[in-house]
Length: 50
Image 1 (tube, rainbow, N blue to C red):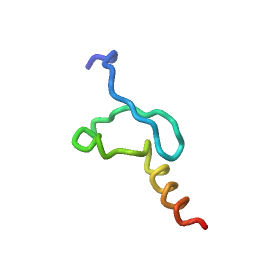
Image 2: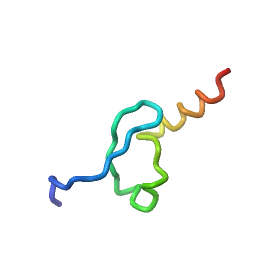
Image 3: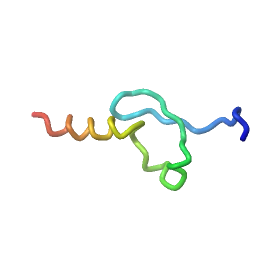
Image 4: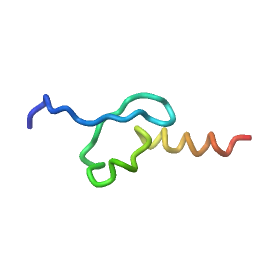
């Protein structure tokens, strides 16, 4: 597998860090908003805070 393939990237909504495409996201890349499960959980916790 070539290592010089340029893959699409996005910015995480929670931490603001860039993250790149993963094979697990091939069918739902348009819906991905967070770089990790921790960021996804953290965004919901932040919404619940007063």
